[in-house]
View (cartoon, rainbow, N blue to C red):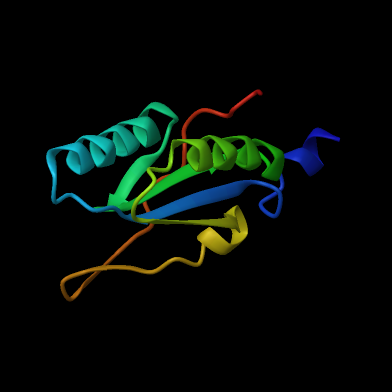
Length: 112
């Protein structure tokens, strides 16, 4: 059973892409709160306005997605994408003209 649970097709990655207005002081504060909330929930910045989180299952991913929906400010756009670990393994990262290897995965398994 545990072998099925740690399958690359069950492990999920959640991407959060956002474009939030930052014209007024209140908008900047809301955008900052949103970003800090992502980090507090275990997301890591992949690029500015693109955050990513490893989840042990789609059920775990759903919990984090619900949190992000509740934390989304009234203005702006937030998009959430879920992909399997197998799909994430096909990512190609290019910095300038240099191909870079995929960063190492999480060193600790989530137990709940």
